[in-house]
Image (cartoon, rainbow, N blue to C red; front, side):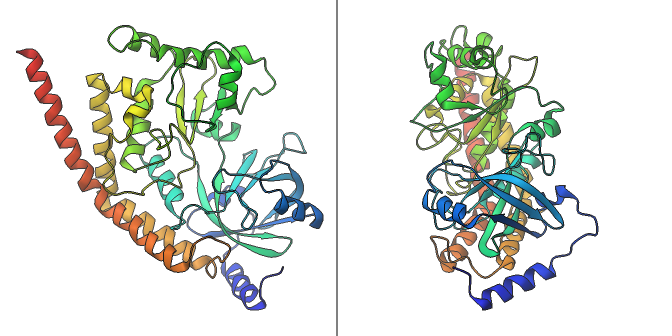
Length: 408
């Protein structure tokens, strides 16, 4: 059903108010200072089928338009886990699904996040911007009004998917092994045994898809097997062959500062990350993904559920890595406070979303719920640093006391 004429007029006015350059720069689609406009045109029967079978990963052909650039025959499918639904579709746009090698903005695919699970609508964009500010790899994000066959679908987050373009920009090469972790059951980085299909189930390869499984998965298997060694003996010597330990600790620390409840120390096991192993290396690094559940609880402990991730738990048993963890969280706290950066970012992004269009009636929460949650996220951004700095001070006192006791 087409949206009401009054809503069309309002949205159209907002579209016309958006400045458009004479020569489109495709990279501008990730410009988070304005709301983009994205149009998809697809067969009407395919769209009906997509909505009816929203729980399927079936791709449908469509034309994708951004400003004056039209990309023909892209693949469109439903996506998400808890956010999947047929009311406001979460979408993956695969530019090379039907035309091999086709790209847009130097990427093979983007995600149109329906913002279904985040009433504030800004958690992920703010979190990814903060992760990048702290020097770690993170997806670029912006917001867009999305139209399908001319019908307004609502405001979406445009999310850069980790793929070869992402890897090239951040690591200088895109030939390594990239895996997307899929939550299937609660998992804590315990050994999975000798069968590689157990690893394939949890860690979907996103590069080297057509290569034999053994050379792609065996270093990942070796990393997880090494994690089963006792911390007191050979754990560190063995794990460092397969894991960039400082990077993993920094990754976890930034996530801890941001109060993520469904990530590296998630409430139902580890979740929402990619793993990358650069070409020519055996060491793996972690990349963030899906930050809809960050900044949920102001007073969440920086050690919350650490024992649910055996990799991190084992690392923090080492005094230098525990110190790095605390130092990184302290840097996060100070960076968030500097010029009120995190608070300003949340405030700016929420104002941008609210300016995009009338409130999205397809969402499962009200405008009042949205406004209240924005207030909660701003409060988190304003007060989180003070809470964690106190925790850090207490943890350092405990570490110092333990060191003094051992010296006696």
